[in-house]
Length: 387
Image (tube, rainbow, N blue to C red; front, top):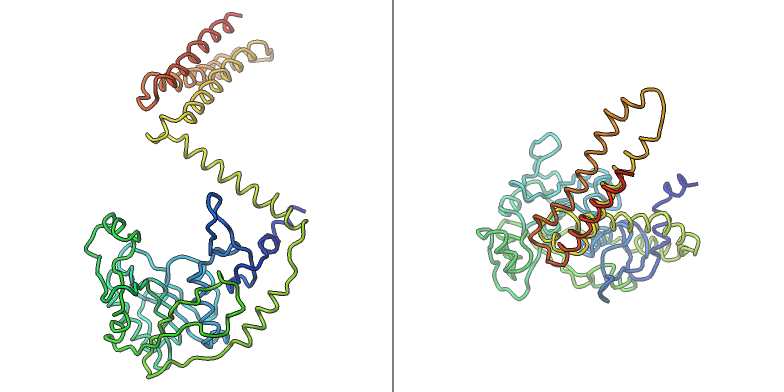
């Protein structure tokens, strides 16, 4: 039973999040949006596959306006790690290049060789140009490997209130963070973005979702997003696949919603274990040996629990072992039990004593509490030891 549930994880997940807020082309379904626990803000991230609204916007454009559905085209995806990359990794004739800020990013094939001129039908560069240390190199590479009739979708972070592109690559990471909260971006493109593309010999078309997706929920895609299409010809060669897309969306729209049983199964077997895992990691983070933790009540309770369990655990093992008789018990007691007892009790006293003597972050009351428990523990330990 449990194996079957795990095997059908995606089915239960899709049923659990079935709703009318987001249509996701990556996992083909309509889902409810998640809300942040401490506010009324709604997340536009797909609750099933974690695709972002930017990724869904680009994929829906590719599916609606290109011949990507044929699966026979040579496609190059340049993006950061995410759902867009994972989607195309299993796509026929697709090359995926995940952008990394470590070192210069150069487009190579699997053998480390340059792609031949005019190799790709479609190139998607998704929000990388503002991060790349040398976007000029990337523009020239794209122009070289793009087919004469091919198209390049070149999405970038563009500030429509800025007349010209501002370069921040000379600034430190922390300075860019203070400047505009996106420290990974080395430049902020302005209204001159199109002119920059044209300066590299690329013809440019700007498209928006003017029709075809009116019926989709608002968080499915950014209908105000401008799609920048670069090509070598005078006009990009696009297709019209809306009939096929609408047919697929209608099938998903009419898919049965999850019932109470599927919701219960997903909650018990997937959500609760995940919450437990996150809770454990969160707790461990709050009691770790970082300086900011050492003055908290939670850290004090953690020290007391660890110290008391270690000390009394060692003492109980020592006392119980004294009453057990079997061949060779004396040697086991002397060479195994006694060392365990010494290590555990010394560790327990050391943990509490170290907090009391050396923790400068704790206030008087916390140190007094730990010191009192430590004193009582030693007195009770001596009393139990002589019983």
